[in-house]
Image (cartoon, rainbow, N blue to C red; front, top):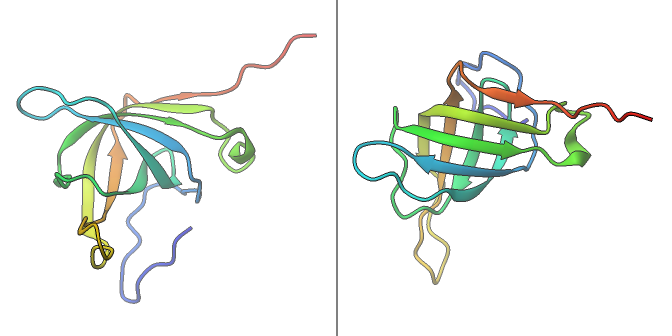
Length: 128
């Protein structure tokens, strides 16, 4: 897990695992829903995820999204699900330093909290 800043308070309701997993997210706020965009998580828990993005339109706190996270097989000992899917809301957005030289794109750290309707799929046992 990532280190906490000095003086910060841990607000997570559940443990998270530092796993890089493919995540697709679609914003569903006012107006036309956008297409799903691929992101890579930095950490995952049953309460939410954290990812970093270069999205030109930064996420906004309390924005509602639909997401699906595919857990890599190599990480299933640490996090025993194959997929998490459902709605969530953005609870934190922060800018990650200066844009890289040349492209001028800003990077953002985004924390999502899952709603109670989250579906967590487990691998089904194989039959012999």
